[in-house]
Image 1 (cartoon, rainbow, N blue to C red):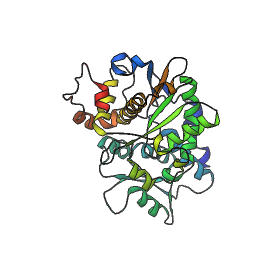
Image 2: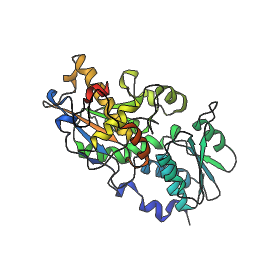
Image 3: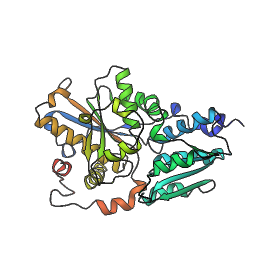
Image 4: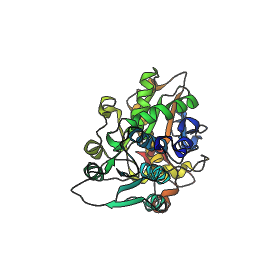
Length: 338
């Protein structure tokens, strides 16, 4: 069988799936800028796919399979913090292709288990060598004979998948919006959305939200690691002023609070996008430029939620304790975010 025409690839065609669900506007207690005419909504990627990397992983594999670069004799190597690896593992297992996924030793256990349970030709390798990043290791080993690295961090199919599959559904569901905030790891989602916005003449600002240094949120990176590992030309689309930053504890808490109003319980990267959006709105308000985002009297903000809470249960249990700034019943979100 020609692997490019395998029934599993046909069944997972993102063109036939609902990828994103956009929520109703957040209530006032979850929107500290409600009085400024700001509307905040969530765009949850777990529609008919598990997470935002499902369709992207399919494109990463389909390309080289179609070009004859990957066969059932190839070992696919990829560095991943979980979701891309999960997508790759599912497809490789279905197609009978061996894959070795190199994951940071500190990856959430739920994400490791979600891949390890597939068994068969799927292998998880935990990486803890400080002299070499998981991405560098995957590139080195993937260059060896019989191996192939998909390298989501330097593969044009990464942003292309988001531009082609996610962006049309997202903007069809949201209409004209001022700001879309996305927690960023590979920069692929942000790049794809920005390319779509530019190509279609939309006025939407795409806001990549990175981690402040020495903070960890699954699926996101600080700027230093983005600059070290990501070879995609993201800097041609985003200047330093286009970036926002967030921290670990508020990311978990903001996601946790959103569960009270959203039908889908989203993971911590959604909380990071939420925090980044709140910081950017606060920054614009202090600078007196908030009205630059306003259209027809409103400022529409959309927060991208890339996956569900399920792989991070153990982390949420340790990160969802309130502190003196707020309570679960009446959280001070702006104080938390800043």
